[in-house]
Image (tube, rainbow, N blue to C red; front, side, top):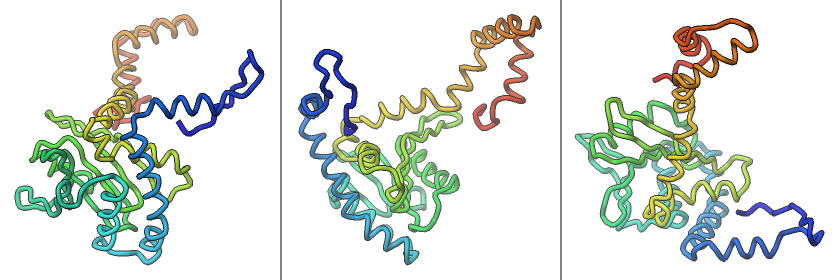
Length: 252
């Protein structure tokens, strides 16, 4: 939305820019414009405090103070109505729970600002989500924000919906676009669900399933025969794709 439209109209020889951008801006509802403006301002506001935390290798408690401020000032949550800290789940404690209209919708697991987020941290917050029947999990060290969706089942399916690094060289607009989905307004309207579905549809696991389908394997067989005159068996193609072409983690 923030990128300039640089195509030149063949009809009038002028750059289609301001009028189109103004029209696009008018189509966004006020709540969305306000939410994006708030996120953008918060990213700017907390850049220096976040850099300072990273520079002095601040502990998890200090990191949590900044995250609380960002959740409220940037993402629009009320500290008392929407957030709950040390949420107890079967003897363990989640750092934050997010409530919208009094319903628990997400857990947040916080790590110190210098600690890289990893699979062990995800498993930790996943346990909370499974036990409480919550779909959304957020990992955060102040600098990096990751949002994961959990689909219940045996086994559960975990998909990364978004990741943003507030101290990266990525532009402010891209950071704002990503974090917008974590705002109270967007979460309430379940816009993050649409983002997750789009990401899940093109995930390595989904693409691997497509490649291993009989339709695609048969198309590969025909193309191989056209190129090499070798008439491979579909089962042979499946075996090679599974064992030599696709990464093991995509076959889970």
